[in-house]
Image 1 (tube, rainbow, N blue to C red):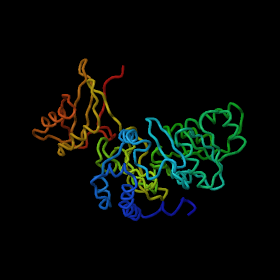
Image 2 (image 1 turned 90 degrees about the horizontal axis):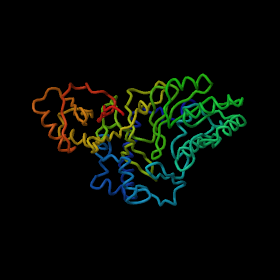
Image 3 (image 1 turned 90 degrees about the vertical axis):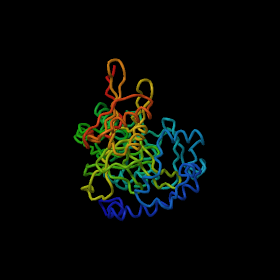
Image 4 (image 1 turned 180 degrees about the horizontal axis):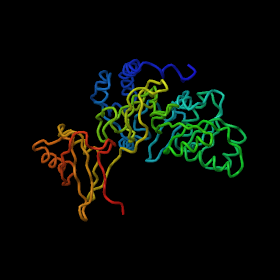
Length: 410
């Protein structure tokens, strides 16, 4: 189809779901067999039974702090890869530090689909202003552009005047990079009197794209769409010209879970993005990105039928220091496990005079005895005293927060 990267994008959603979960048990089984880290992480689990979302939700979520611990214990990749480090094409280091491998193969990071949705086609030239040093973003989008059949100008970051000169001379149609750096390049071109009007399509990521900036870039001749990905997983979701949410990549299973837990939330509720990637070289099974988003109902008006998320909505890591001690979302999740009748929970951290104070709000309505039981459990789990407030169901904000810090910033 001329308006689709391939036929997978317009499959019946049930067909896609069935195909993903038919492949999942065998994929996890091979990961456990070939990667000792996964064998330990999923020890005791019958992977043959992980054939639907309910079974997948029973597996533990692997989050970045745990990934860093595994990598320190068993460097460089925590035993989670199926190849020796020297068998990969590139090895990266992201802040943390977290180490990521790049395997061989065409479009390893799955970026070509997003570039196509942004309007790029074989034979186009793409100016890539993502970083090429140590982290994978530059290579991620270059490999996608090359897989699509585009030539790439490896601009990287900085050297603004040289990048403007390259654009003026080589006439790329597409831009990849952060949205704010695209504005910097356009401003510098105006300052230098250089013609960069060949740039008409952009795929941006790595920074916020407020509506005002999108409109400014459009007024200057560049239609930009957003992509969402991580250094561990590659591209996760992307915008189409419908600009109604981000469409999940075909090769992934995406869940939205309550921060601090592995429990999936209902569609529309904000939670943490958790991804299972069918990458045979670097399998990631229920990997917690630490990013917040929510599932959008229905399919995109552009006709692509995969699940859509709202896009990046903040960070799920809400670890907060109270009275000199840290409180984690995992602790709030533990309180919820002990009191399943308490509904959604939200710990509000405030100041009472000159002291920190905690109030646990629970969407439980008026349940006799529950407030006192929650109060005791809050103290048991966090080792600090706090108050409990029972509120009506669905009255807490839908923003993914399980810990809200309302203390004034000095």
